[in-house]
Image (cartoon, rainbow, N blue to C red; front, side):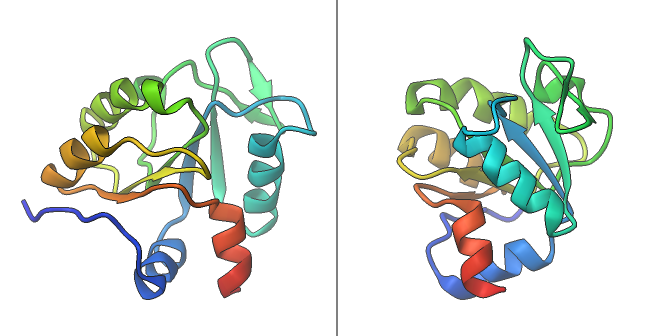
Length: 141
């Protein structure tokens, strides 16, 4: 298995966004004023398949909500995390258990976890940290 990498170059970010269709959003809030909800709405408008992950909600933005990544029954291209940095490591482990493998683990603005990034990249998953997927998408497209 080839190693993943920590993505910092525009060309690589754009490539991820172009070649991904399904995005699981960890910590997606049902509240429209929350960043996670705004980002999910934007991604839906841009044609992505958004999978809400929230253990206390049944449906968010019209989509079935899953309590954890392990409960999702379809391939995921990007895991997009709206979680506290200290909560990232368990999600990294969950991500590595998914089959088929996830291509990219994306930590939103102000979210970085180097230990999780090292674990994920060693297993072949690309990692984006401290960047908003909505902002990056809008910047390119």
